[in-house]
Length: 277
Image (cartoon, rainbow, N blue to C red; front, side, top):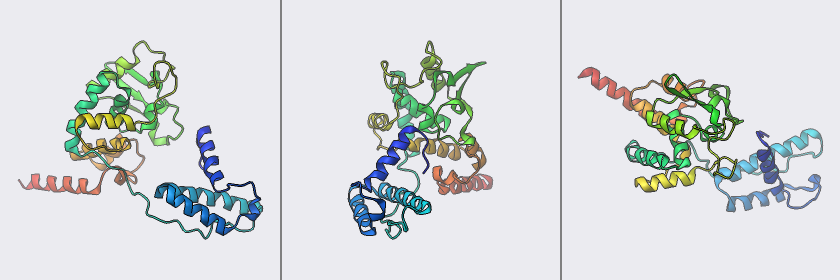
């Protein structure tokens, strides 16, 4: 099982424990019991969640078979139901971004940390997890430029290609970050939960709801902001390679997850039309 931090380990144990409500021996766990437990999950959890529970439990019981503790996997015959969610959650339209961005900046300038986190995600094409794991020293100003060192944040889910530093070209955002770190402990969290706590803010959905409501646009997932920023780059003429590089992607394989293929098709048609004109 892929576990990255102590909390992940506890959560994995909690999910596995759900399949075994009693302390009976594993050898007495029947396929019928497994099916009943999964049916109960289907009624109470989303498709992605109950399918993930099943996948994780199958891995665990398959490992038990390899160890020789049980002869067969009692969940092998349980069939997952429902269709998984594909791609990103609902995104902001480009027309909505023109309303969303001024409101996000206004709230950030008034001290809304959540709005500032969202702006960093959008402009720097980084993940929320990377931003909230940053320390004060990860925002560096040198020779008139502000640099965000995502490479040195302590988020353990980074891949090699996302261990990078990015220059903040949006001057309004750069000024907000500079003001944020001024006079702060270099080793402190850049975004603590509040003035009395050292815990970082993680859930950005409330902040996204605040900004969307004030901007008068429909709510969109905060995790879609990275894709929205990458889509805007594509619309403005950046190539696939340039967009992928700006987001720290090692190749183009994951690009369709963030930028719809239709965007590139529209850009190509526009370039052809301009050439004809």
